Structures are given as C-alpha cells and as structure tokens.
Length: 257
Image 1 (tube, rainbow, N blue to C red):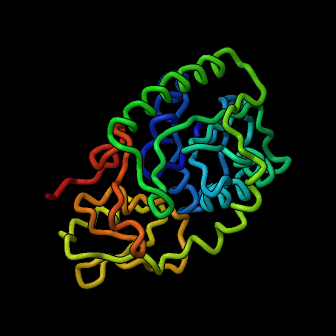
Image 2: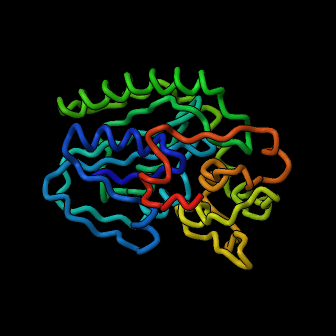
Image 3: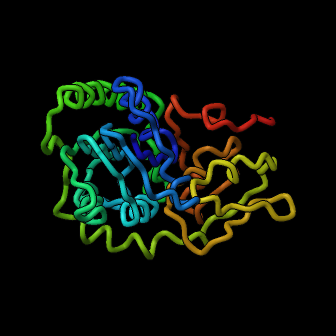
C-alpha cells in the first residue's frame, strides 16, 4: 500500500507510476486522516509514503497520519518526497512521527514543479514540461530500485541545514484567513471538492474556509478553473499549476462548466 498525499498532482503522479509498476494499491492519505482510518494489514506487501515537502518538512496531514498509523505485517517500507528544490528533513520527520511502529528502509526524492504560489510564481509551461520529463526518469530509477529490493538513502536534494529554521515557520504560516474570492468565481464548487481536508464550505453560493488552519496545500488555488481564489495580494499576478496527470476527471469531479 502507498499512502499518498497530493494537492496538485506531483505526488499523485509518482504514486500512480509506482502503484502500476509494482502492483501496490494507493491509499488516499487525506481520506484516511479525515475518517480516522489508522489501522491496516499490509499482508506482507511493501508500504510506501509519497507526499510533497512543505517548508522543508512534512505536511500537517502526513504528520497526523504518521503519529497514529499502525500497519501490521509490512514488507519493506519506502518514502518518496516531491519537492521544488530541496527535500529537507521530510523523511526524518516522517520516521520520527512513525516511531518504532514502522521503520523506513529507503528514502527517495524527486524534483517537480513547485506549486507554492504564496512563496513564488510557478515555472513557465516549457519549464514545467522539462522538469516533469526529468522527473519521470528519476521515478523510473526509483521503481527499479524498489523492484530490486534495494534499501538505503537515495536522496540527492537534501538541503537539510536550513530545514529546522524554515519548518519552524510552518505552523504560523498555515492560516486560512488570507484566502479570498474574486469576481471571477463561477460557483463551480471545485475548490470544495478538491480540498484534502474538506474545510472549504459553500455559504451563499461562495466558498468559505471553515477552519482557522489548513495544511497549505494550495490545491484550491491551483485547481480553480477561473483563478478566482487568491492568497492575500501575493498570488494575484502569479500563475497556477497542476500536473498533467491530475485534473478534475481523475478526481471524480463532474466538470460543470
């Protein structure tokens, strides 16, 4: 089983390729947390974790799952993190949260287009295509190592020296107050559907963030078909990104417009 957390498709794409190549089922990590599904029997199957790096660490939802997860009869355990530049200490943080209940045998990282538009603009379409093409080569290498049963730390984009300082800012940064809706909103409710934490609710036909904090996945901004969602003023002139392998039909969302 592969516990997968993905906001705009990078980690979904990695997880899908590994799942199809190794015959291991994907588990929606966000749904597992929402419905408190923390007990699993792997029946000897390998267990994977695939998720993006946030602030050089792990997303809050991944942290919640790892702190509560119990997997019986696991095979080898692997972790693959997707990142824009550095993978930081996300793997170490995951292991710390898992404790002695599950020991990670192999670590990997994959550079993919960054979707953190509250921090910086997304790459151009040409740059996205180049990065994703190179990522697919990396992913195939990971698959070969997993098939061969290789273990160890295969990460090549650590940048761990700055991890602690940056991740310390994550808790204060993941507030929902800066999210706003502009006049382009067409009331399609896609943001409500794609939010991994299901905290976006529709009131008077407009989305409202119903919790003070979220994981800062930026799924709502990046998957809005009309760029109707902003995070303060800093995202107004910035682009949007989702992996070409990841769009509304894959998510099971009817495209109403």
